[in-house]
Image 1 (tube, rainbow, N blue to C red):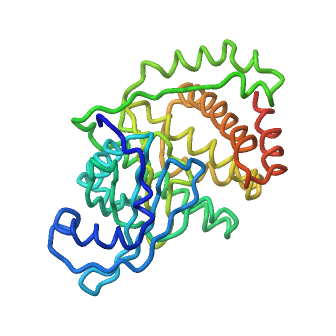
Image 2 (image 1 turned 180 degrees about the horizontal axis):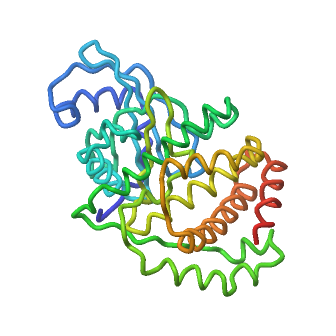
Length: 310
């Protein structure tokens, strides 16, 4: 996109959005329809410039839940194209599904798509562990189906790792070792690998579990080795268990996920895993320092646990 919008607060205005949905019904739903907007909700976000919205509407008397994603700092058009690409290549009815994409409004940097019914997988960590393990098994199968999707004709950004050494050094005494030869080696192993269509942030917070499993958040989609997504999921699963669940279940959970996915290259996995571990550590430190609503003691405990990986 040439220029991003500077203000998206209209997305919070129920009356404005009611008019908008009726005016744009032909574009969004491919038909003229009478739409009543019954509720507007904005999901909690660490980034105030991100607008992740839930709209409950009735269309010609029938209820429908919509999601909207927009931003004043990050373009959304590529993410919408990715959704369309995946949806058109069988992920509308796959083991792990993509919500139906409706329309992208370039002037507002706004993507609209059907709501994915259910709860985030990360919110189900405390449920029966065998039931949760089965969901992870199907996540593995679903990830494999994403990796089998043909590479799209539109361009995708390459994986980019941005580490703030100064920030990390405030919590990690061994920063020099962290950014030493192992980091260099990991980057060397992973940089030339552009093998498959990868989600780029495949983790429990981006999986919605209900009657079906849905994958969401396509802002990081890239071309890379499949181990990028596999290592992301397993590392994010571990730190979420540390924060919200029981680490004694980690062995069962990650093995069940890998049973669903199948074979992978251990050397490439290890290289990506190291990069994700630094990335997660940096994210935890950001939450600790910048989020006023965060549980500080829980985050400190998670950071202390994660540092031991290095």
